[in-house]
Image (tube, rainbow, N blue to C red; front, side, top):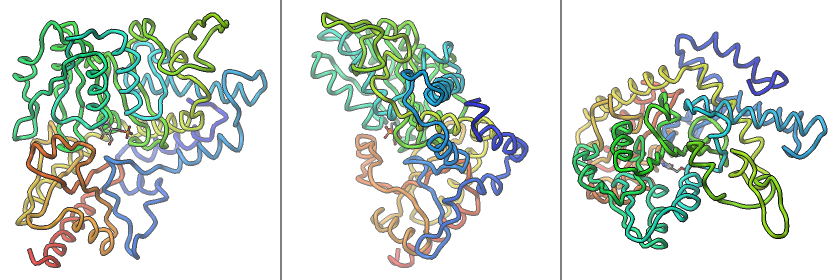
Length: 430
Ligand SMILES: Cc1ncc(COP(=O)(O)O)c(C=O)c1O
């Protein structure tokens, strides 16, 4: 799709044959890093909610871009610039189609990451459309990137910021959402899948409630788009942000989906080259979408490599990805809950849970658990508040352990995690 010149096309054809049966062993063969050892042990990578590993198809695409096509885009008439522009433009279309955007090119803005996408909405929409006393509704289970931009906006505009309660079982209190909505609510900003609790929120329903009150529905899909089929039209998102590095792509590239009619009316976020159609000293006119929101030389290689990541995911099939992770999270919950002293957080129903397994072992500091898992067993997990301090504290915690799964993880790795946790308990005599 990116280009017939691009070697990814050939890799993908082979890949499609390979993974019709969702063969995890074969998928693992595409990830060079999974062959390395850590402290003399084979790497067991369970920190995918932080960032995912990259298949050789993505790594090769970056190398191919820099060895064959590197040039600045939308500027040169020479062959390399046209090739790079085509590849970068096509990447937008592919990403837009991946989330079923109605206008895949115009509605797909390449940004650095989900954080930048949410800041873009707060600044380029919020600062021009909110008035004093208007309200923003978010939830207690947000990542900091879907809290802090709204706090800044609230301060600047004299708005109110409300947070919907999260129940003890880790689900959103929908009654509380309804209670917190009013005619002054202008934005509902909600995470699709929580990086701390794993909860998959009923976004379609939340979108309907937002729209009933005339509010915009802003979705943080950083932990959803990489893991399940996501359809912006079905969920009624006005804006939706996600990061490439959490879905097999490189760091420094992400997507903000925005409804065309909103983006057209909005002020630009950053100003400079490429986002204009005409500049006079007295004033300027903006470029067409999506370039109006992509000022300056963008992460060209990153955008093209993100498209290669999406081709990889498309070949796997997002329904298969979700089914695989659902199986892993179910198995993970079942296996870890058999270990005395392990407490698991978030919903236990795998229909509404992504592949995020957050837990603690009674009496052992999560940092100690992670350090022993790494140094003795080569297992990478994450500890801390996972940039979701409010929800961590709501559960009376300062820190948790988090094992998070992706396309290449296996039940054997979960078994190894469980047996290693038992040994961690022995070390700390718990
Ligand atoms: C739910 C959620 N939202 C937003 C982000 C921010 O992503 P990034 O750091 O790539 O901007 C993360 C990162 O972990 C996340 O898990």
